[in-house]
Length: 454
Image 1 (cartoon, rainbow, N blue to C red):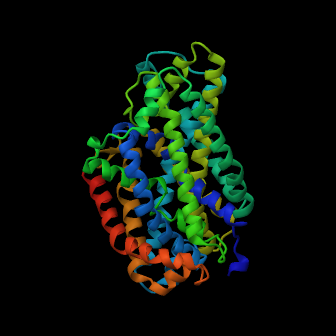
Image 2: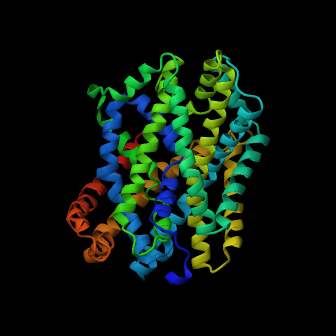
Image 3: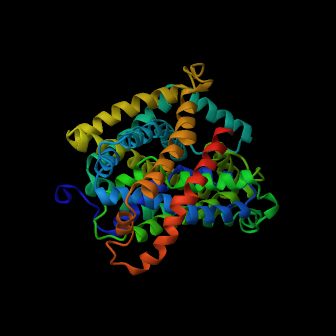
């Protein structure tokens, strides 16, 4: 089976692909605004601990399933638990990323639209309310957002249709290093702005008085969602990793890249927010409402420099959106190729048609379909709430329970230690096993309940 299946070219290729899946829009807009809303450095400390003690074991659990079976989500469950109801976990983690991709591609399309504006027209130093109003008009108009949504999905389809090595691996090898270079360039610009020091202090000086149960739950949830856990993307990518590769090292490398990028993004954005005199807890509108205003306001003395930084920033946004989106796209393609035995090209087209249709409805829910509600939510918000608050956490919980309580302990240890050849992994395995079986399920339930009552 392995000989017929495409695999990543090596450990670095696997880490870059998995990091690409994890690093997305959430690292650039969600992490900074959550830091802003929950007290700066205190939140970051809890976030770091959550990544290592919670999200890494869950990441490894999902990766172990894919690495052991060399199969996509549905096929993996059939191999490891044939004739049981666990197959529905496989099906759930085919559908979940495709729903996410449908509305994620809408936001990816907005990124393309703002990149186009930054190249052609730039941003003007209007009042921030005017900038927010412009964004509202943009997403409410049916034509342009649909066009950019289509372009974004076509880009994903083009990359995925080329295959694992020639498409996904090659794209991540180019874009991941470029993403880090771009975000560092933006960081250098941001910290050089007058008044930026307050933003840096905000990020490095913890205020432990702001550590509340809700802040802890938010940090746990951010570490969970940042790594794209519970939706089969990690499992699918891990199924393309060669058997000889050390899954622990791959997982640590992925988490390290994700953490590093999120922290750099925080230091690239928050100093600029403080320099512009804007509330650090500005919320999800940070990218499309606050930052264009900042670029324009900061460009009064050197407009050409501000314009260049704006272009670089939205290039970063677009690339980050693509690296995550193609991992979600690949889950559906892998299912159709392996289970329905159709060609990759046909599978790519089918996934495009399905996600484009649902994505179009999500896009139109800001305009012509704004009054169409599902349980009181617009189509976009319903898809977001369904996946982020329920399907992702439910999928993550089932993965943890499956590896920790259903799979044979020796089989899990085998994957963790490369068949016993990595002795250091044997020492770490007991801690991993304890976290996986007893800590992770409780933490996921806390995240679930926090999201449910939010």
